[in-house]
Length: 407
Image 1 (cartoon, one colour):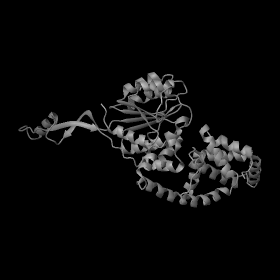
Image 2 (cartoon, rainbow, N blue to C red):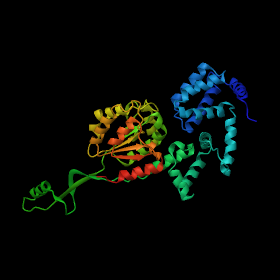
Image 3 (cartoon, one colour):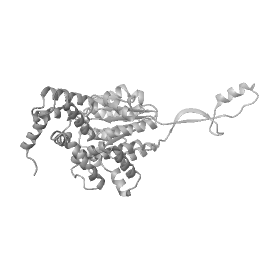
Image 4 (tube, rainbow, N blue to C red):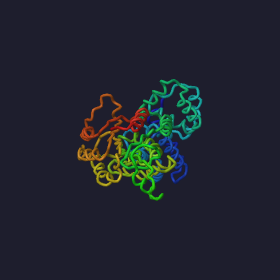
């Protein structure tokens, strides 16, 4: 029979009574708990672990309810994270030895192919626990799946699965697919000429006269020049507000792969303020690069002020990065805290300064999506293209669209 709420509370209080609140076992338990939350998809970093340890040490562990809300105030920043936190708290703090017992039970279950939990939250926690215990086996399983060892329909289903509905193991696989995504880029003709070894094109009169003067001016050899072909600059404006958190984290992996393929790529993150993270994403190690990005941004998972951030970009950065037929990727759902104030004017200026303004909207995963919000309506009026960006298939389509020149 299932334990009642009062019995669980008594059992939790008895287990916590044996912990040392002065930096003993409780510190290790908080660390394991934070790792589980991070593997399940919550943005838990070292700073939150330190803050949670200090808070628990200050309030003590005598009351389970106080412990729950103390750690809840530190680790939970969005309403969608509450259920994951609640499941993980009951799993870890109800019985400290239950975590290892669950791992030992889950290993043969996963190998035997038995049914997994149908609840997405429970499945994500189960995958997170199993991922830490069997990391190598998980990688082999994912690689086999990516190598089309299964059916084509399974691969198609995974490519079309929404990022927000993926389990922890599927998110790891998605990051690996994005890192290996081949980005074929097309060069565009510029107005600048360079020397050409081919016997065709425009005559290079200056080079012909210099060559003739070196030989006394007795003969003139026809030399040619051609227009220079270069990749156009790419500017990315990525929304990192609370409603875009699950998609922005995977989109950053796409941006990192994009910057490794192309040189003139500029990345900006915005929520309530605009942050240039181009230099941080230039690191050779993707984990170090994304870690630098998370430390440089102070408004992650907060609100959104699209009009103010676009005004900041148009005023301080547009003339620096929007030259030579630049393409702009605007990654946002169009939900604005300021009710669309200033979005129309700034979006018009941004469209006039760029060759292409592509709006990437995860809400387009719904077939009947319509831009009802005021900011979304204004963005739709001024962008040149509107594309979905919520799964691996949409990212692959975006890479193909960037490769094709558009007049």
